[in-house]
Image (cartoon, rainbow, N blue to C red):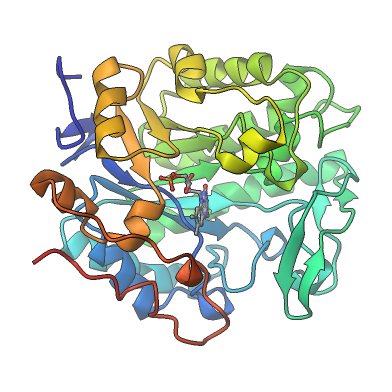
Length: 364
Ligand SMILES: Cc1cc2nc3c(=O)[nH]c(=O)nc-3n(C[C@H](O)[C@H](O)[C@H](O)COP(=O)(O)O)c2cc1C
């Protein structure tokens, strides 16, 4: 690390050099009609190639990992083939792109899963609703996974990582955040298992470690990242001792020499729900000896401050990247930013998919 890095300083991410430390955070945009990436998605990601690194929206590792209509997958050859247009378009613009691989676990509904019940560590329903072809419906109680089924899910992550390589990605990020399957195994509010995947912190971390181990077996640690959200309360997430849990998990991740660990700060919803750990970055970054990526509520000034403090090496931006395709160039020019319009965050079926997606103006 330079003595005084800022967002625009290059950085070595394993074997790859990133041109800056401005990362596009993973964001679900629901424009993959029938789970297949499209030319419009290639245009969207290529528009954002001035980021040092793009992390894609969460992407299904299997048909049963589907939490949302029109999110993409990476389990079929058709999906894998279709992702190539995205990686090629980003590379043609000089960008780098990791695929976020994901299993939604209990944040799903039979209407999204061909009638099957969602699976989870335990039969405990998540809090909230989900959009399905039946409209907005409450999340249902999932089916607890049999111990013997868990290796198959680890294998799905391995296969997704293999497919991501075939699709031309520069690496993958495991989605360990936001109350989806990996997070459900970690936190005891969702995991009440009595086998080797439940109980102690070590046991609850076992699924994550097996997934990371499998994915690193495909890519090597230095092309694998992970996102964690120790203070997220969305989907009814809670743990009896998040400080102990996440410091253990982050410390164990050192074994894999990952490309980075991305840590998300709580948002307004989390802070309003209960007294969560904040700031996440100063609480947990000390446990990771490799690169740490800060996320959640950053702008240029706060991003530069966290880099200068030495608590993070990269900063990822979510909503600012939705409305500013050329965010890194705007930071360099200290230019004004377009405000994001929430209405276009998620695609609605196959209607007006460009709106709020590829139509934000770039700087002239
Ligand atoms: C529309 C939208 C979709 C998102 N989808 C994902 C996702 O697929 N995977 C993920 O890890 N985080 C997702 N997030 C969270 C962002 O990656 C990020 O953590 C969050 O927006 C906070 O960063 P920000 O304050 O810079 O926006 C999403 C956020 C938004 C606004």
